[in-house]
Image (cartoon, rainbow, N blue to C red; front, side, top):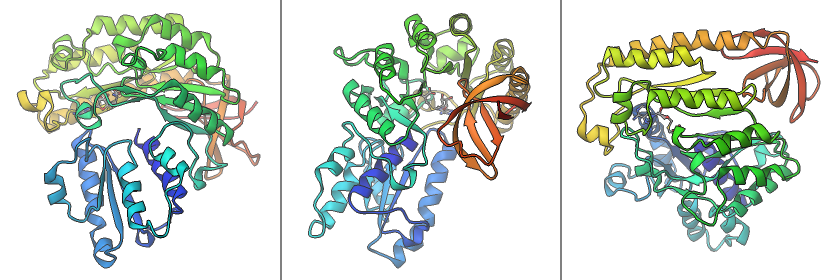
Length: 426
Ligand code: SAH
């Protein structure tokens, strides 16, 4: 989401006549887009901000914009006091305050063009920033802002505000404008993307939106993330199977595999329900890959409860597991009412056990690709090798002198590991 938001800010700034610099020291404006989903992300943002202090001191006209979840929808006064070097505070997904600040400051020099205004308030088209034009082949499109679910551990609803679906015509306009700039694959984003349209009676739901996007000429691949297990309907699953451009890859976090912890997390499903959902997805979508997120060390998590999570992953053998150690977030239900009582060392131990388990699972799944031909969309070149993804979102490297950018080509897989594969053009 922050990648998508940052790209939008860059685009809006370019419409005001700004260009990207290579060095922070050369910049007139610095935007720091922040995440606070875990303490480590928040620490990183503070660290980066502190490192900008000398720049601000030597160049007082430098504009520093703090954006994103560290700010939230209403900037707390305490943040303003604590961070005097910040000139503008922007909520997540909203370049508005920065644009307003810059255009007031430079109103003699610049008129805020109608396009800049439109891009800033995000109703539709998006012009890729200069550096991405002709180079970028995949793009993120936010379709649901905010979140209203309130999982006990999660700060996102507090910082990104309530769930709000984007009008389908804006999503379509953005998709069309991106395709015209060379984008081949779009990924629809939402904290709970499978709830798309639920908050607006006049909007289609996610299957309907996927159908509409499927009609757009030039879009080759469509993905969406992240789904919540309770909203992943059979209709949506069938839509993924039926529409050739919608890739067979589902991101649907379990978080844990223990019913007591799931209830304490306010997730709204049981281990058995999650397992049967995975089975349903696999039965209906041919060759599907599935990714989960798992949190270890939630308050009160016992060894036996952790083992339930371990067993779930071991049994289900999902393609990807994004792992996290529980991090208390100020103001969330778990932070307010449950002591963070699993020691850090124990969180790490559980984390590593899952990490090792998943490495083996991924290696085993990938080994089945050996000798097969898969269609890869090539995104960029890293050193001498082109990098792309299979429909199932597996990373594939191919060494060749040809320019493969934006091409979808069959690749014969010659080597596989737990995190990527290597192949040759078939
Ligand atoms: N709504 C999206 C994104 C949430 S953030 C989703 O459900 O995937 C991505 C992941 O971060 C979550 O799925 C969760 O596993 C993890 N996470 C969220 N809050 C956390 C916390 N307080 N401590 C540790 N991990 C957390």
